[in-house]
Image 1 (tube, rainbow, N blue to C red):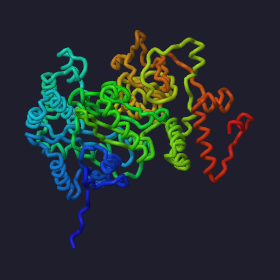
Image 2 (tube, one colour):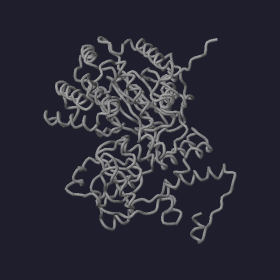
Image 3 (cartoon, rainbow, N blue to C red):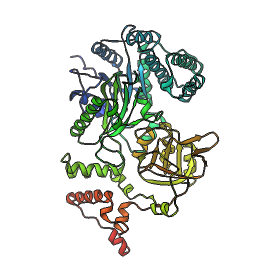
Image 4 (tube, rainbow, N blue to C red):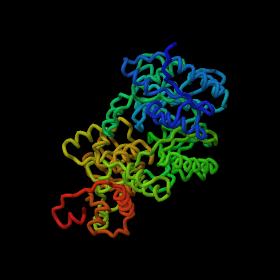
Length: 573
């Protein structure tokens, strides 16, 4: 009897889905949920997932594939081409795909992604002929060259950004969306020359070569520095590696009826039961999470396309009922049609954990034991973390110099530094660090980890800085657009006020306010209620905390005694 070959590739698509939600260890969280969303009838572009077992083999065998993997990838690619009635590398009806990572535990932004794979001079010409939209095709091409060049060919991301800015300056354009087709052709030509200059090789034109080189890059990204550091920080252990998701592209950059967004089924900062998120029209997904442009609140989508907004709200409700937890979703709108690209349990602050779980119990979605088991015990102490002293602000007539988005709650005050390396160095010397950036990227994870607070001038509530800060319980204000940063000379300017590196800055992650002075911090609302400085009725946070501790008392099986030295300690205990 012939030995059964190991299955490494699992297809997902209407009527042909091989995975399930229970296969997270094998397909990663993204792959398992793509299969699950397809199975429950949501509009998901088809594709296939390469298993974490393949990544583990690749990592353990110096970049070699396990037997049969390449053939399984090609078989599933043929299945995808048939379903999409398009061909990877086809001149008349080219198929483009995205390549995304996805481990069993969510690691947002830590591994690599390539979009628009399959473009080359022939397929660019074919897509222009098919769509009649030269600008869209060339915009997709310049994005692909940049992502593939950065992720696969190790051309510095900053070099592409500098080249793009040069073209915008020469053409007198401000935003990427201001560039017309002729401008974008100039960008792609310069990008191709940049790749040749940095690598000594021409940009690859064979789509199958592009595909396997991208798969390799995602496998390798499992062991990049930022991914390793993130796993260490979040105590993520025992995983085989990352899965790779190859998915038919849908396009948010086809014009003003197309767009992309990221949303949470509840507020990830506070836990409030509101639809929370952001979108950008005429953009691709990386534009939102990378903080390149500051997006619009999800509620504004109703004014742009009410039908799509209502469909999205319906999917929000369905996903919460299905997964029984707050979801973080990614979506794309292509010429007025909605597609779902991802769902996962949302990263959130401990404040959001507390409120969302208490309210889900009250809504009948989960039971009390589930709520108690979910709120991370290691994060619970952050409920008692300090906040900015509101009385000090009032008494000294201190007003915020600017306001951004309240991306992650809490108050912080410290000295300004502009790079991750400097932030880490100063933190080791005992400084209270506030990291200030135009935007953050995964390479900044070390500096973010030591910061008392984070401020960015670009990006929204779902940008990399915001998501990682919430996960770490670090106060963050994002999208503070009035702030101009001169990293080279070591200062920032905001509304005529100059702050040099090492000067003090304070931020309120609850309100999005930024202050150009050192402000004392004080006890959290819970502590203030417990010590009598605030009434219970004045604090919603204490209300949810009190209910949650009631659940704990109901289900606990062991008494806990505290060491209290004073009457006040006894009362607090």
